Image (cartoon, rainbow, N blue to C red; front, side):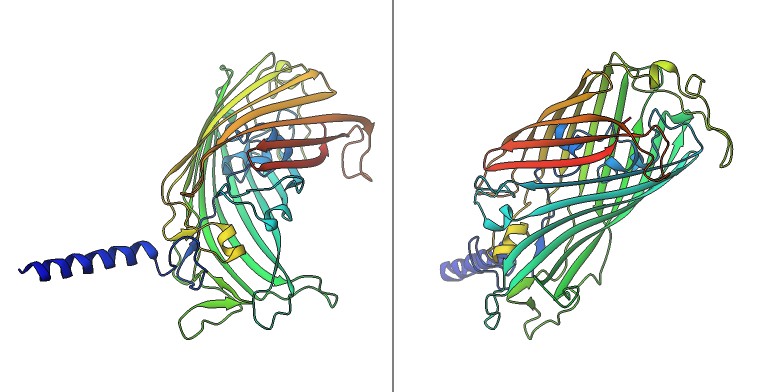
Length: 434
């Protein structure tokens, strides 16, 4: 082979390598002009209920009811200490948002963006428990306000909604010492006009992807330790293409000047966690009461030992590790909002977490604090350390909510804050006090 041929071959190989890295998107910073990409659905900041934020996201081993279903599907069947009947239910709702007071880098990609400061995050969930079986539905929704990029858009305001819906089921083994759960979910990105006065705004385009979840919680009765592990991975799908918009001559899906990904695929996420508690029992047996229609077991029965259900001050410590695997051919959510290329998720990322919860005022006040390291999924940024704090305050007034709850039901108000470099988030919650 001649020297000229050798140089030509090396140039061709180099060109192929560059093309393979570019994935049809161009270099970082280029205008997004292709649908040949994926969105890395990695959420760095903890954005769920106030308790989860206050505990810095280290919820996988402590999940009880619907509150932890997004992190560990086994939580849907774990019985809380005050559950004494064969049938039970649980609901949870919270709202959180990055603060507009400071410049916000929500994605931790090295840049601040106005759409981050306008974002709102809502979490809703409900669960039903029948004996040792449980099922639930958990929804996370985030909305961003952006402007139309189409030539004929006339500055029209648009709402970009990204959401996650999880349906989970679980079963209890060994008198409550082992809980296992599985789930199926959907990730969705939708774009629609804002400020519609003639009813619901029609969707201009939407793309979605399925996920599968697996999880387990080990809670030995005789030890003050609880451990949990979970896995969330993309479900196989060959026909997950954008809806409401047709591909153009180049095969791109464009709505209001926004290039939608041809398909999306959630990254694989693993969680490992362990918790311990002092001054009050953490784990206890759950011996199945009579079926629907039977009497509740008294608190002092062996169904729930007194040292498990009694109101006593406690100190809870929980630690977790979240591992997010690479996402192929992906950019961050901000790339979609700004339509600028910034590749995300090219390497595995690790997020260690630590949370502490205490009850300094028994039956009146619960406080939380924690910290977690948020990795970056981008080459232009670096990991950042978060500090979190939260509180639940008992409202000592009883109300049955028009007969829907027990006559002695009282409530709580709560909140949490999360601070890191270029990020300040908050959450508020309202619920039943136990």
